[in-house]
Structure formats: structure tokens, C-alpha cells
Length: 496
Image (cartoon, rainbow, N blue to C red; front, side, top):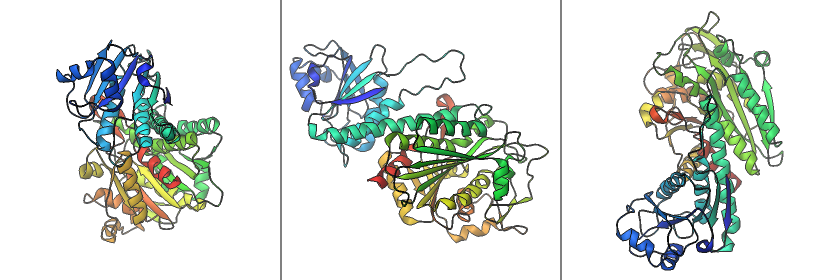
């Protein structure tokens, strides 16, 4: 998809579709009012007939509007006469992207200057529209013998900006929105790929492919033999029952001076989770291919950062393994030694994500990070607590937690903080090892976070539990690409 900006009068441009926002249906404003006047009040006539509902995201498509160069006019309701909320603008952008999927629309002109968004500038609007348009092109048909025919807008979009002084900021917003959506698409692709294809080895190859596309990214892969030498007994205990070897994937992006401490992202990459010996119920187990969505989001962020060429150092680490039952699999009650030297009693082999992450969290200390953020589909308990709307956030640093929360609000990819108080740590006590890998039914997400916190004491750290938001079920089944938007907003905020 090509998205650009223009300062030319949109009423004179020949295009398949011209897009206007409508606040007050009784008194049109800006470019929409000019179009209404040029068409002999045709738009006002349609609005008086009640064709456009007065709610954010409602649309109506008009054809052959008199005296305008466009073949179609798309009216999108803001739902309010004055300044609208960011959430309503996002609804509008999504609805617009869907409406532009109509057959025959190969190019469009979108008028941005008629809508005022609370606490947001034109660059943010351009980014939101660009992200919505790009995201709406997503199709996953990798495993289908007949490829999906396009039922989405994938042509050329032009954003009309009246004042040339806003061009630079608008172009920046367009680039950011496209890069974030592209990163989400990569994350969705990896999440949606069948587990017999998307193995730890496959993820390693995708990381190498990313390095070839973006020379600013350098990829290193650690084999099981190398991890064994480093003492990663926790991570290797997860892959012990699988014929697929584990990999530790390290993607290094250097966009700032060497002296600038990096942001390190650590993704859980369990490419399929049977639960191991503590095997899961068969119903819905196919969805456990999504257990690597934390890793997928790291890939998505690394691609978006490289695409934008951000002035920041970012390192993406993926702990990739497959959790299978076999004669060599780790058993409940086994005790393993992590890279940190701490011993762990594995009471439940289905609590494997924290085992692959804890060794990765120890390993990344070598990078002397400024902050570390791990991303994992870690617990079903977070879905009980927060549902399928919100990411669970835990952190040992208040400022980092606040920054991620703000980034989530700004990107509408929201998170909510849960406590990591010492009161919960006692639930991980073990009679036979330094700590157990589960803490019982109570506060399951929090005790999982407490477990990880035991391996993240040397730096500022946050944990994102994305089990409720990483994929959808039912008719819309598939990976969502979250929390790529939140993480990218966090990094963009640091850059600015």
C-alpha cells in the first residue's frame, strides 16, 4: 500500500473515493462544507434524509455526487460536533478502512483537517489513519491451496493536509503508522503459522531473514549445546521432551551510540505447548500454537524499529522451545538449575513459559540494559482478572510501569498494573529447591510475575502478560499482533 500526503485541493482531484468526516450534520464545516457547496448542497440533502447515523464510525458511501471530481464520496461520522476522543477517532479510522474495501476502489483521498481530536495533533491522526489502512490489508493464507482474493483496500491513499507547515509531522505520522501495522502483520503471521512449520528453528531463520532485509539488525542464534554450557537448565528442561531443538534468538538493533544503554525485549517463544507431562485438555489445544505470540511481538517491534530507523538501541531476545511429553520430558517434581544458579522445583510442566524466560532474563544481563521488558502468553489467570481487553503489567520500577501504561493509553493497546508485593513470594516456597515454578490457584498471574522477578533483580524490568489479548477465538480466530503498538509507542516516546 502507498500512503502519501497532498496539499492540493481535494475537490479537484480525480479519485475513486473522497473521504470526509462529519461532525454536525446540521452545519458542515471545513472541506466538507466546501464540497457540499460545490455539489449544490447534495451532501446536506443526504444527511437530512438520515442516511448517516450520528455515532462514531458510522459511514455512508455516495456515488456520482454532482460537480466533484471523485467517483464516490465516503462520509464518516465523528459522533460529536466538536472535538472528539482519540478512541472515537480510532473507531472512525477502522470503519473508514473497512468501507474503502468496496470493490472498485483503488485510490482514495482522505481529508484530515476537518476533525479535531482531544489532546492529539495532526501527526497522531495521520499515524492512526495510516495504521488502520495498512492493518486492514492483512490476509493470512499461507497454508491454503487457493490464495485469498483481495477483499480489502490495498491501493494508493492520499491524506489531504491544508497547511504545508504540517507536512513534516504528517509524513512522520504516516511512516510510523505504516511501520507499526507492518510489525503487527509480521507478529500475526508468525502467530498464525501452524506449529509444525513455525518451530524454534523456523523462528531462527525468520530472525536471519530480518537481518538480511534490515542491515541495522544483527542476529545471533544460540544452540542447545551453547545454552547447556551457559547452564540454562530451566529453558532446556522445557525442550527436553521434544524432537525440536530449542534456540535462543538474539536480534540487536543499534540506532544510537554504543554508550547508550539498550532497551531489551524478551519474548516467550513456546512454539507449541501441550503442557508436557502435565498435559492440557484436548479441547482448544490447537490454540497453543499461539503460545509464542510474545516472541512474535518482539519480531514485530524489531522490524518496525528498523523500518523507521529509530535513534535508539534495542535488543530483541526470543527464548524458543516446544513443550512436548515423551520419555525424556521433564516430570512434575523434577528439580532443575537455572543459569542464575537458583534451583527450581517443577511442580507443573505446563508452567513452562516462566522457565524459558528466567534463563533468558539472566542471559540478557550481559547487555547492561537500561530497561528490560518481557512479553509472554504466561497465565490463563490474567484472563480471569482482566478479560480479553487488557494486558497484565507487573514491574519492579514505578517509572517504567507508568511509561508503559501511558504508552498503552496513547496507542489504545492498554495494560493494567498488578502488584508484585513480597506477600505473594512465599507462595513459591519449596521444601526441596530455592523456589517452585507455581504458587497455587490464588493470584496465579502475580505469582508468575514474582517468579520472573527473582531473575530480574539487576535492572529495571517489566513483565507483560498477554495471554488475554494475543489472539482471538471463534469466527475471528487468529493472532492480533498485540502488544506491538504499545511497545512501539513506548520506544517512540523514549526517542522523543
